[in-house]
Image (cartoon, rainbow, N blue to C red; front, side, top):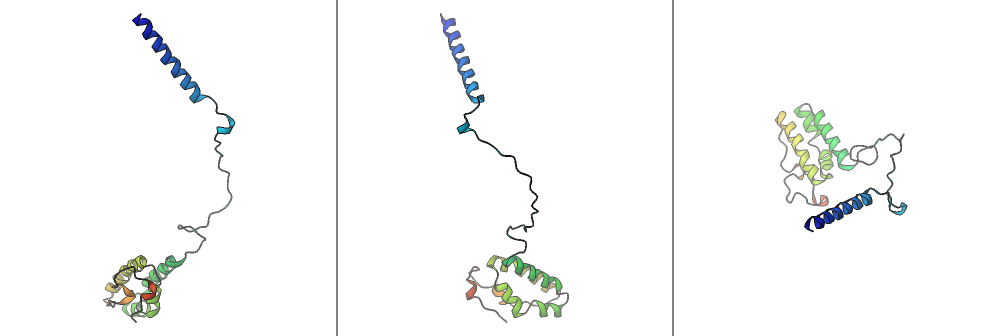
Length: 142
């Protein structure tokens, strides 16, 4: 009798497993079916810059490029003073986001150190605390 009960329980277990497998692999009704479309071949050429948007950089990206090109053009102490240490360049820096403005001090100070040029402490409001002071409260030092 004990073997008969175990045989029945294992038969029921096998039957439940078969029904579960049949339900799992059975085709789904049309209302519940998920259709995955294959991607269409595209002939559009992507011309966006890495940050998205249209092709040309905006805002701080453009200003950072201008600052980096000015730093690269400054190939002597006189050129550095004429290109970098000007009110125009300082106002360009003051228009930047505070994190980008703080980051731009390093290439400028590195280039100044190459030519033994002293950058004023108040230049581009790098010493102002808190760092995220609103732009309209910052003033040029030159």
